[in-house]
Length: 261
View (cartoon, rainbow, N blue to C red):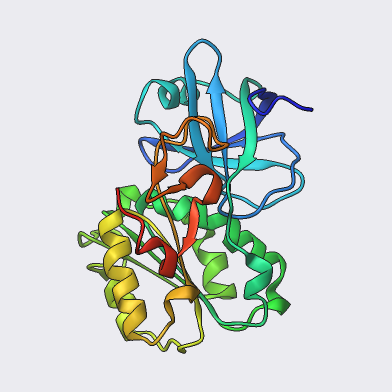
C-alpha cells in the first residue's frame, strides 16, 4: 500500500504573477483529479500547506498561492526549474458530471476565485455539455484582480462579469458587492450554483441565490479550514462532525448550513 503521507517531487515549469502577493505556479504533475479538490504542497525543511487546484488538465497542475506565511513565502521564492513536493489529491470536489445539461453559475470572491478555475477549465473543455454558464467574480480593488489574462476569453465563452469593492481609475467595471451582479441577473431556479470566497461573501451570495429560487441542494460551497493530514486522521478540520479534508472541502448548502464550529 502506498504511503498517503509520502509527497512527490514536481518541477515548476511556469510562474504567473497575479498580484503583488499572489502567484500561480504551474508544475509538471500529471494526476487525475476533480475541480474543487486540493493537494498539500511542501518545501522541505519549512512545512506544507493545503492548496486547491486552479486548473483542470492531464498535463500539468496550476496552483494559485498567496504569500501569507512561512510555507507560502518559501514557495514564492522558488523559480522556474525549482522543485516543490506535493501529496494528494484530497477531498471531494465539484461533481461536474452531475451538472451536465444544466445552467450553471460560478460566484467567486478574492482568492476564493482560484478554486473555481478548475471548474471553469472543465466547463470550457466540455462546453457542449452545459447550457448557460455565468461567471461572477468580485475583488477588493483593481490591484487585487486574479486571472485577469483570461477575462477576454471568458467574456467570449460565458456570461462573464466582475465587480470591485472600490471604484477603479483604470478599469470600466461594476463597483460594489458581488450580490448586485446576482440580483440583476436572469437566473433560472433549476440553475446549479458554485460559490467560493470569504465566509461573509458566501453568506450573502447564497442568500441572493436562494431568492432566485435555487434549491439549497443545488448550491455548492467550499469550506476553508487548516487541513493538515488531508485524510481525516488529525482532526484539525473537523466541523459539525465532518472532516473538511475528507468529506469536503466542497459541500452542498443543505448540508453545509448545519455545519458549525
